[in-house]
Image 1 (cartoon, rainbow, N blue to C red):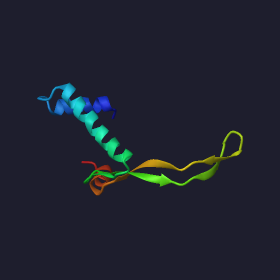
Image 2 (image 1 turned 90 degrees about the vertical axis):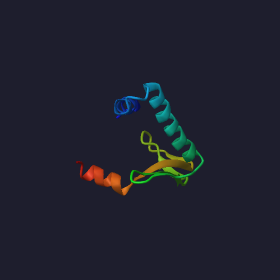
Image 3 (image 1 turned 30 degrees about the vertical axis):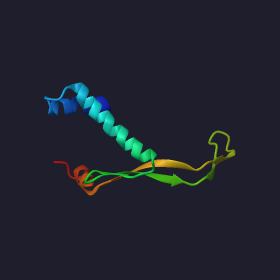
Image 4 (image 1 turned 180 degrees about the vertical axis):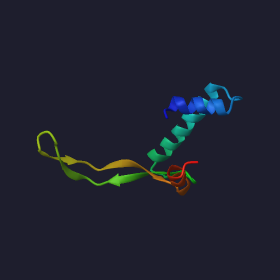
Length: 94
């Protein structure tokens, strides 16, 4: 599902809300999640899952084209851990 499809679905579910308001709410929600992650904080939606940052250590890797060893610096990677309820929904759809 794309962001546009999400907004269209929510607009159909809540016909009293104009599409522009739904769009603003969805974009603000994404922005709030991103802001928290940038600050290094965990975002947990109970029953759905948690977004968090994993720290990756610097390492040596290989250039797949040349086979040459290259240094890869430390970085932060986004991770998601699904919640119990989301796992149940995925494994036993109703």
